[in-house]
Length: 483
Image (cartoon, rainbow, N blue to C red; front, side):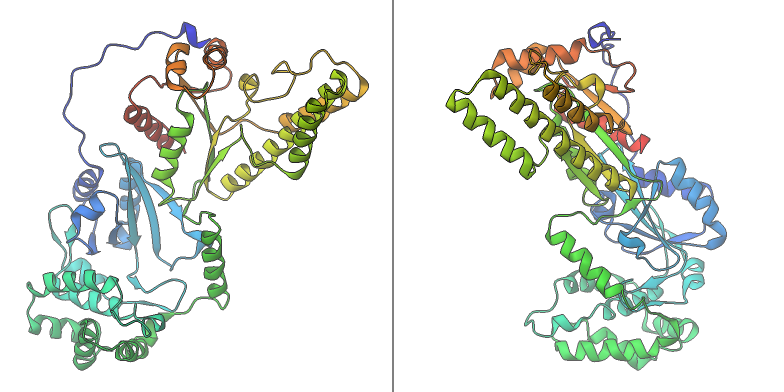
């Protein structure tokens, strides 16, 4: 049915209790299912990971892994894969949407305690059972004993020392956070407890080596000594080392080059990516909502923002458009101008198809492509074949027929998106919002959108006359529930 026949919105419901934060629900669900786990690092930074600005690092007993996965799935978490699949064995990433804040919550789940970058030699610390056995309930999650946590903290921070830090006069920026966390934990431990834990669980690391590693985290420690301690610790842990393939550094370099070129390299959903279409008339807020969705997803997941209404123009399009301007200025015959108009529309169709193909390939690799003005058949009057837009209909020559056929073949190859959002605004609201375009033009396009029958498109109609935060929150919830 057309938008004009949609039922009016129901009156607002009475205010209800605010939703419980996703992190709190996760902690409660893990406890109710007696999952054997612990937050093995970072539990002192609750504000950071509860707001989605940091990840939640959970070590899970393999025997509890099925219950853990069921718990995450029940809360709407989704498995994501790092770029190029590069991650240590036994380590996985999950993301869930916190409806209270609209932020993505990142759970970094470990079956094996692995420290170090997966792009370089990394190490498994065989202390999982000890950490789980000592875990006690804290404010949200279970946490291990502070003695074990101090040991793990010192070892993993020493393994972060890098050769590129040697020329720097100041200590690396991450060291301040490590020291504050270390100070917090050392207020809760006894030295005898640390000694006993080292001897029982990490005999490879002598007390003298551990103390020297601890001292290498002090700001006064020279950079060269930090590298010496990293080398000594690496030798001590050599039995637990896992070296990446020889081509891993080249993969890392390639990812950095892509990032410099503005190409996203975030994690990709294991369930597969999606092409999301944002449709609506001018003034409906498509660009604003697309920017908001991109800003929400891009820090965590591979995200592409494509405007198919204004695709990047290839050389042929630029030449056709330039030639069209010249012949119009010269006062050429109308028949010639109309043929050039059809040529330019055909070149634009090709540009749209190429951008569509890029979005489809991106989604096939697990990314999320957010597409404005996606050329669905229902929306061809706004972005589609020249015939659907009433362009050059009076010309009926063999050349015009071939140009229209050539143009139409590109639109026929554009398949339906995975998810369609239609932002609905009435013509008066559209005119009031879109002040940089002629009012009659905006009103006509909004009217076309309202009068179009979208019932076969599968579009989810969003009332875009609501305040922008409400519209964006609805889009986030519907998108996350569907992808």
